[in-house]
Length: 253
Image: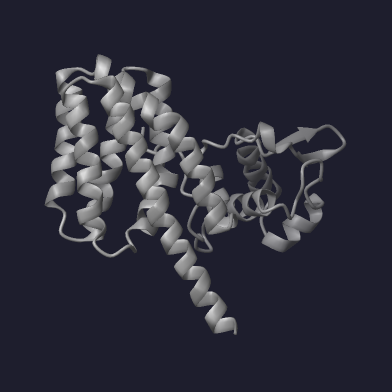
């Protein structure tokens, strides 16, 4: 399942005909941004009905969607209440996207890279041990797509596929699911790192080292190559973020 499959698209501001999606997105963003804090009640139903000019069933369906994502809990006579952050479904594609939107870029990058350092080296090591020949061919095909890319935009999808297929190659459905759900955040990270000049030339050797270790079925080398790739990605992203901070400081000065 892709990060969007099985989910309505709540990420882009919908047109007027999709008020249900607009309510889900607006309230979801307000919750993850901290405007509505854990323990807070949603605004009164009458106020929300007036604000959005929708029927009660439309509003209640939207709050049920947010409850299914772990953001709200409905209590009798108390209404819909924001749940603690540790109960949110953070791998839900929409919740994850909203978090990306409200976090400062540096915080988002640090959070994502920490997760990737825990997850990806171990997944690569396991894949080197247990991947089928078909799975390895799939990873090699994704790398070939990266090689064939002409622009940073062309590089994006095969790069995502490369990492996703490594998780799938572990043969563990939970790891494959986590890898798939991380694709959304990884997409934003790759877009950011693509601002580095010669990003294509920098990215290919890092990924080739991982592929070579996988094809050699060398778990330790796969783990190490993945760590190197992540460390160098961190350096690239730090350069971009610091450059952006300097430009903002110059404009404000």
